[in-house]
Structures are given as C-alpha cells and as structure tokens.
Length: 248
Ligand code: PEP
Image (cartoon, rainbow, N blue to C red):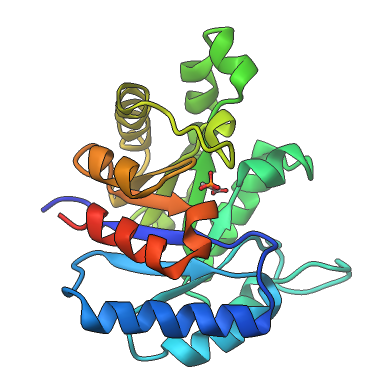
C-alpha cells in the first residue's frame, strides 16, 4: 500500500474570520458537488480562526491544522500556543519548521526537533517542512541541507517511531515566488527525502510545496504524495482543483 496522500492549505497570515468561514463553505460545497476525493484535504488558518474552521468542517473528515506551536504544554511563554491547547480545540495537524519560521523567526533544527517530538507525543500529525535556499542550491548544497534537516528524525524515541509524519519538500526559492521547482528537481529531492527518512521512520508521506497551481499538481502527482499549498489555497476553487489533480 502506498503512502497516505494529502493536500494541505497554509493560509499564513491571511484572511479574516468572515473570509475563513466563506472559504470553508465554498470549498465544502465544491467537495460535495464534485467527485469524492480519496486523499486527505486540510487547512491551517491563523491560530485565532482554527476553532471557527473546525466547527464548520466537523464530521466531514477535513483536517484542521495550526501553522506553528510551542513544544511545552504550558508556562511563561508569552505569545506562544501549546500542543495541549491545540488538541483542546481539535487540531489535527501542525506545520513545523516552515521556511518562514526558520528564516524570519530564526527557528533552528534543534527547536524544530523539540516541536516535532512534542507534536508526536500529543498525537498531532506533524508536517515537517524542509528545503534549501536559492544560495544553498547555487552552491550545490541542496543534498547536504536536506540530509541535515531530515536528520532530526533520528531523535524520535522508539515509542513514537511508528507514528505518521508528513514531510513537505519546500525549496525556499519556490515559495511565494510564482516559480515552482521543475519536476526533475522535485523528483530528485523527494527521492532523497524518502531515502533519508526511511532510515528513521516507517510511516511517512512526502509532499511538495512552492508555488503549486493545478498544472504543477497534475505534473507531479505521481512523484510525491500530495502538496502543501500557500498562495493558491486562498482561492477555494483553485485549492479544490489542485486537490482533484493530486487525487490518483
Ligand atoms: C508555503 O508557504 O508553504 C507555500 C507552499 O507557499 P506558496 O504556495 O505560496 O509558494
């Protein structure tokens, strides 16, 4: 049996409450009208809209995620949100190590590793983002960077090793640029990620993220297990078409 397939939306810091609800209503109506998708679809809105989204999609199988979390359950961490708080409002998955968290907010592999272990411990599906910058690719360091980022999986203790993890290959130079990576580059990176991840864990899916549109989804549907979608996910019609194209 192949790996489970996912198409996940990352809204980043976009949309207000009204717009999140409208998006969910529109996406669900497309889902009910269209052909039944065999893959899992989900969305990570801003923290404060997670509960509203969950209330709309409850019972549909649609996954609701967070874009980040702290690794501790509680404490003096002003501005942070804990895994138990996310579980409390029904969060299914959490994006960990997004390049915007790594590069704008200075998150290290060490911190990302703590978050990953905490998500696993609290039964929240982690979506671990990995990917090289433009500079790293130009210096021929793509493989080295991916191997290092994936190596945090070695810290997973035996009792958590059988839990599912989603890994998203997100080359930083392709995110939000409108210029997706080519099929060839995605294929090579996804192969390497599968090889490296399988040294440490058994149950994982590898997605691609970086300026995905429906054309990209159609092109890469056989080489990865789905996609993490930023800009295009903001439009429910586009997100639905991308989901359909990844559905094999
Ligand atoms: C992302 O930020 O995870 C992403 C893939 O963004 P975009 O689709 O806009 O490149």
